[in-house]
Amino acid sequence: MTHVVTESCIRCKYTDCVDVCPVDCFREGPNFLVIDPDECIDCAVCIPECPVNAILPEEDVSQEQQKFIAINVELSKKWPSITKRKAAPPDADDWKDKTDKLSELIR
Image (cartoon, rainbow, N blue to C red; front, side, top):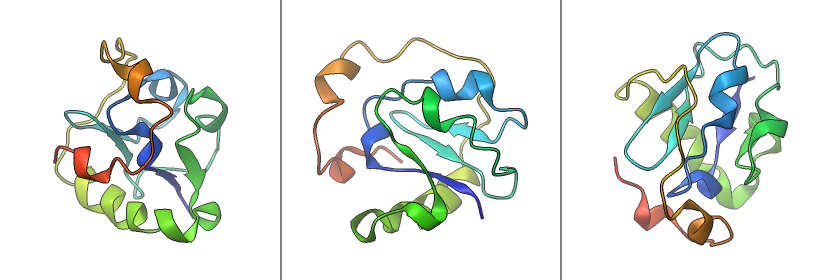
């Protein structure tokens, strides 16, 4: 199993999780992070670091968030690795409690 970044990350893109990842499995897009399932070692150290609770073990992803498993796979093949924490987008706090953000995802 691997971990999955879910919808809560869209437009928030806090990168606290990146600093603790021992295998650099995070990939960065314009307004979202994903986890490369081929690199993730299922250590779970990233989970408590996410301020919006966007990271879940694959087996715990809810039915309505299942599409994010495939999104993580797809985008991890296209986006570059991110290995250092960066500042969150200026409006991240405005987006952290919003739902139904899939239409906001920039691929």
